Image (cartoon, rainbow, N blue to C red; front, side, top):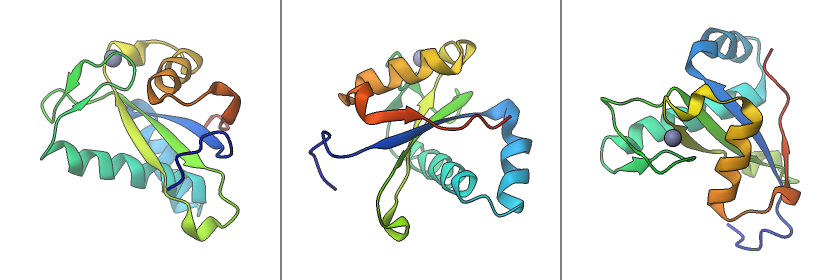
Length: 125
Ligand SMILES: [Zn+2]
């Protein structure tokens, strides 16, 4: 994966647990972005079983018992869709109270990426 964030662009999606049914419906309808987002979120859930992962926005430790209420998903806008690998970060219950814009701002800031390289993804609803 390139470390040159200047040339890499991401789309960002916020996946909230309460919207899960909508996302699953999209996956069932063949929506590739929804597939990527849910795949990234499930990968995060597998990882949390073996390693600690902080909230993407405030660094509060998350765990299986203290599940994130939302995920921020980074989907690279790669020229080759076959190689796209989305990554997700957990968002704690407190941070997920904020709106999508706030979560994106906080989450991106902590990755060290510049907001210039990202554009918010389409809203799910
Ligand atoms: Zn948080």
